[in-house]
Length: 258
Ligand SMILES: *[C@@H]1O[C@H](CO)[C@@H](O)[C@H](O)[C@H]1NC(C)=O
Ligand SMILES: *[C@@H]1O[C@H](CO)[C@@H](O)[C@H](O)[C@H]1NC(C)=O
Ligand SMILES: *[C@@H]1O[C@H](CO)[C@@H](O)[C@H](O)[C@H]1NC(C)=O
Ligand SMILES: *[C@@H]1O[C@H](CO)[C@@H](O)[C@H](O)[C@H]1NC(C)=O
Ligand SMILES: *[C@@H]1O[C@H](CO)[C@@H](O)[C@H](O)[C@H]1NC(C)=O
Image (cartoon, rainbow, N blue to C red; front, side, top):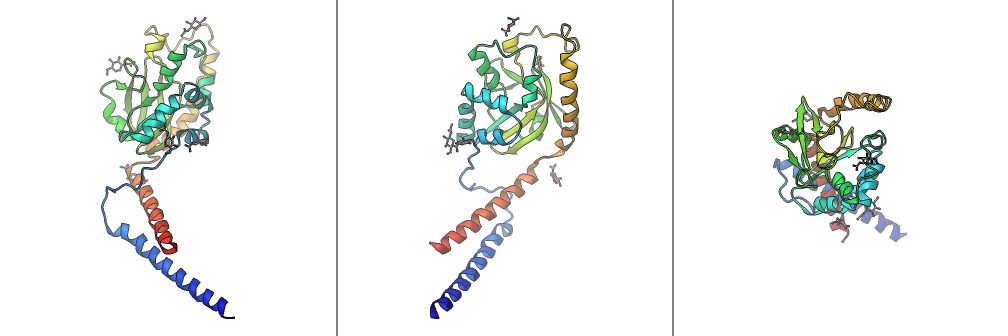
């Protein structure tokens, strides 16, 4: 008879305590209007493999990342640097529509460089590309492997000489990891040379380019309008706010039970 009563009282007390603790902890962040959360809670681990597995389909690119071991370079940069990382990820269809030049007879080193060419050793939000339009930007592949960016009213265009493409959507854009979907595989001049065939005339096989290009062009038109802001800075702050609430609430509950 007595035990259930004690139990009920105890659990009611506990509930009261925890809810008031939650109320206190939950309120405190909104009281302090600091816009920059200086003591970042233990840097979040972003599993790039998982991110690219869930989004996409990016299976081809992920396969190359793994076979060339570039995934370790990228993951290490994401894990251990303040600069962070920006990765441009072509969809599977970008690889399958890539008839000329083909990646099939690249050497192992060339293939590795081509994949490294898709990453920048720094985190860039979409709006950051505005300030990058002046000069070629170095990639993980180093040396001659640079990318040119132009910002056309909010849409980020990427030029390699061989490839002119654009960011068609943002997979993730939260410091320190940015992952952007691009319409085409980025082909470096450092591998394929500067003898670039005129884009308009893929003479020998005219059926390839139009059929492969038109549908992706259309899908990206639909996609590129929300380029307006998949995540701008205010989104990031809100996001951080939610996380800090969760972490605080969780630690409050833990303290109660320990
Ligand atoms: C990252 O995600 C992949 C795929 O979900 C998983 O196989 C791997 O174990 C994860 N790595 C770590 C370090 O959690
Ligand atoms: C990145 O961090 C995760 C989690 O701490 C770890 O499991 C993984 O081995 C690290 N990877 C690299 C390449 O540093
Ligand atoms: C790949 O092979 C084809 C035909 O053998 C050749 O024309 C082309 O130049 C090669 N590409 C590279 C990058 O070596
Ligand atoms: C990149 O931009 C530089 C100047 O900003 C220009 O000289 C170069 O030709 C461009 N490269 C490509 C591949 O468009
Ligand atoms: C960010 O997005 C929010 C709404 O999503 C908007 O109110 C705000 O003006 C945007 N800020 C910038 C800098 O674009």
